[in-house]
Amino acid sequence: MASGNDKSRQQDQDISWQAQKSAMTRDRILDAAINCFIELGYTNVTTAKVASVAGVSRGAMLHHFPSKTELIQAAVEYLHDRLLEDYTERVKSISPRLKGSKFRRAGIDAYWQHLTGDLFTAYHELCVAGRTDAELKDILETSSAKFDKHVQESNAELFKEWQGTGDRFLLAMDVTKFMMEGMAVGQLVTNREARVNRLLDYLADRLEEIFEEGSTGAIGRHSS
Image (cartoon, rainbow, N blue to C red; front, side, top):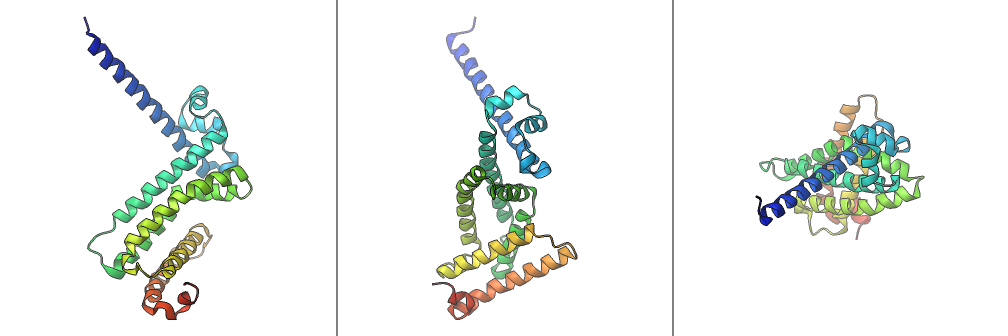
């Protein structure tokens, strides 16, 4: 006959397994939602389509996400978590043997690979939809602050030689961010790879020049 302690342990194990199974189902639904954003576009995503892609029942979907709003909010937060993981892993994969400008150029390449992946494609799809969807826009703005903070911390490590330059550093990072994100979503069709590589080469050289010229150049005139 099983003792009271044995029964208690079995109950704890059952509860733990149920919680794990529930978490796995939830993640499967959120992965499916992100895939739907990429494949169908935000406006065409419904909870029924997400449930179908996830391979879960309507009841399981409603258990985790009773409304589309709750699904979208959770999916945005989940997407940002995955974006953070993706960017962090790409930065960590840069060889420590690279030094100076070569290390910084590798950082630019890592960011470009991040921007051209499926996760950023899904994020851009949401940003476009958020232009005319006030509720989605609010969700994105709240979640984006966390991601921006993480990228700033990563950039501080990648470009640590340039710390202490005040606004010049922040302005240079903004130039990099908005230029590269624009390139990622832009439709450069003809000779795209060659043109992109040339722009990334130019950006890397220009960043080095910015901090060599100090406050005497154009960026110095637009920063404090």
